[in-house]
Image (tube, rainbow, N blue to C red; front, side, top):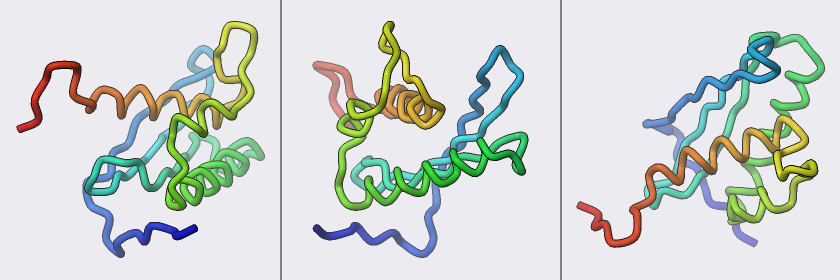
Length: 116
């Protein structure tokens, strides 16, 4: 397997504010995509940066980034996570995957649309 090398400067990253637990927890999902539009890197930070959950989600984002750089499709990662009875992600990293999937789907051309 070959890892896609990231450029030293990664311009055009985007940050999404994500609130969970009825507004009691706030996270910032920063992501960067390769020129072809594929997700390449993810960072997640918390409004409580010294908590164990913040450490876990940061590490999860690092692992997610490495998997993406080795070519694992986002859809495959989403399908592999634990989901509850109504198909919602059971973990915060699963929710991050769902948020990124939904955001990146917004950039996909719809059937019949032309790019450019």
